[in-house]
Image (cartoon, rainbow, N blue to C red):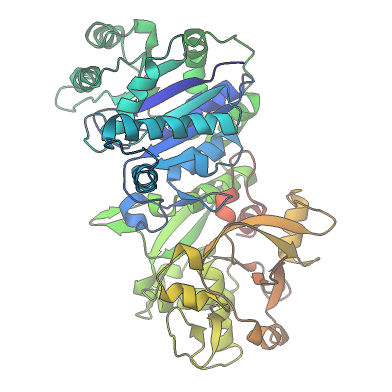
Length: 548
């Protein structure tokens, strides 16, 4: 039986260097050489998953097909590898501790004193191996969260050290570190990485490769110093410079033969690498676009202090990029704080070509979002409402077209006389117990699309149906409240179309306005952004961008 190989990717000096991109790039290159590869992300926090973490704190939780609410790196893995990630691809220290404690409470350790080593590290190794077994993977690429030297991730590092003691060429260590060039010195400095590697060495780990993140490619002197002080062969010091697009990273690493070197070190045969489709895509990304359009994203998770956060809407922005590249349009994003629009100042909406109202929770900024939706509908500006953006489009239409004064979602007004968005039977009792995950629709649900609708033409045009004959598509959900069918006939009589419903429960999934009254007005209860990939942009985003 073939032995599963393991690649551990750690990070040094600072966070945010691109361990996820490096992990995904290595996995992509090995996969495109014909190997079965699966990635695993090890997160340090004690949360069971990322579902309840404020997106300003840790970025947009990525929603997997099986309902797992995970770290954004799961999205990176999906986009690079072109396949779905699941629960086994995502570990948190909270999951590990809970499993160990639950086992101890059930006498699973038969009276042993349960300790961090070996019991917690054994559980980490068990979960990493399980990911490989579940997918029958030749190689498991494990991204260790955080930065070398943090106390929070020490047990992950210890687990990687223990696994490295296996006989044979089955485990290698890749260390992604930083090669800064201070402006007042004008030369790259290797000392931060030297210290990072020394910390790794103190944990019993010797990196086999150093991936040096830097503004420019390193020279021979810097490479030789890395080799000398970090005990790494010069040819195994890999450049990872700032590139126009993160999607160029696999191509850049392949030029340095990182994948060949990894396979040689793991004693695996060198098959042919074919990344021609990926290279063509990179060329498209970097080519000059014929037109530029501006899309306003009306939300509330934009800033921390004085800094703007792209990560709060990472999947959405990626989906817009994918569609823009495919359509040859340079889509510029304009961030608009929903709360500002509540002051009846709509000046930020002038001179924009499209409006998106994305996911959101609670009442803050809701009236501003509704104002933006009204502006889009009245002025016939292409609109895409995602989850909350679909629900609030229903609220806006009920108020301003049906003239149902006070119409609202019960999420914001529990006493509204017109609860056009409500909680379906059974959910309210779950919510009272604060079982937030239990009261939500999470993961993939099948939707039947109405023939002749904008959604239908989009899925048909890009051959995206899971079942073409039945017009069924599986999309990802992450929400609690639902469209209230008691208002369906009134809304449809007034011109709003319900063009998609869940196959089993018959819940409203898609609302539209006819093209005869609006060029593009679509709201989805699901999240198409989580299924968009650079080689396969989502149809609804493609058509939204085309309508700009």
